[in-house]
Length: 225
Image (cartoon, rainbow, N blue to C red; front, side, top):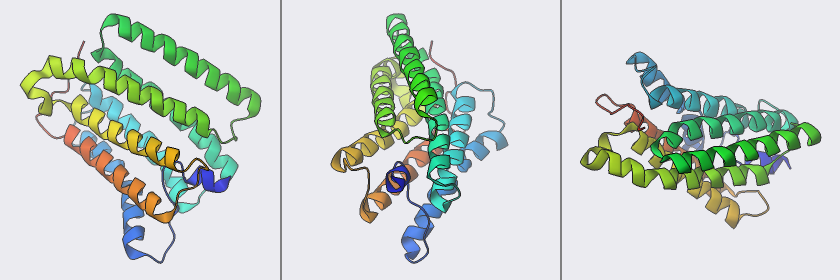
């Protein structure tokens, strides 16, 4: 069960393979880079960048104990069960404003129903339980939400789409979630081999690199209405 918990997003740091070690250390602290860039260029309070800052901090807090084995299985499961719903709420807040009103209302109903069911289940079963099924369902909801929002975002920004912060955030998040779901589908037992874990870490590296592109100066930071 511990292997299933660790395999959710990353691999615990173990000395021995220098390439893997440096990769895992880099991926561990990479979420802080776009967060610090937002703060240093005083972009906090500008549209989607404040939400991206919180998303990066939540990801860092969730994944740091996984990489360095700082929590036992139950403690890590509890942290995951707190951070994953927060990530869902933040990303939903980020992308729902790009949708037309009927889709926004439908998405709100789906999110409220899912979060209510998830919180009820965790309250009954215990927050320390591993929830791979709920996390997979959550990732599916996020993928569907981003895919729905992209056509409206492209239509709104037109040729300036590459200057949109939301475009780069959507691209990085979508790429990571699709790869994560494919790896889980290929490994239904929940345990990933060493090559898969390295590949997933590289995927995280690409994800946060695209987040960095989202916070570069000159980006359009206004949420679409």
